[in-house]
Image (cartoon, rainbow, N blue to C red; front, side, top):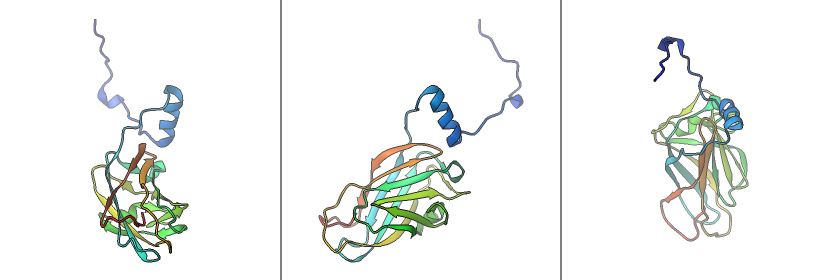
Length: 178
């Protein structure tokens, strides 16, 4: 027959799934499938002109929350020939998007290196699932024209997000910056 448990609900406790617990469970049970996604993943620019000051705008919305307390990180790859900046200032465009992130130390900044923008979710902040966020940052385009490449986004920490191509918004050009 069917057995039942006589424990009252109040006797049960839930342990939050931190990155350390997920790693421990993955080690025991094997890696879990990554099924979370960026429901919105857009990137745009103010100008594709070579040598010009360019404002890049990023808009995201996640299917799962990412917590700073779990060392969550959002990574944007494919910003080809963007100048390195280990403490790149971010500006909020929608829902305080810039305030969610840090360069690993300072809130409202990201770390740009070799075409990869690393955005650590700032301690005490949460990228809330289903909420649309936007932020921008400024770079100077290279002094030569280049073809637009594929820009991808991924995340790790509270939940894993597989790499996915970002949609480009704004003017299309074969000499786009991103």
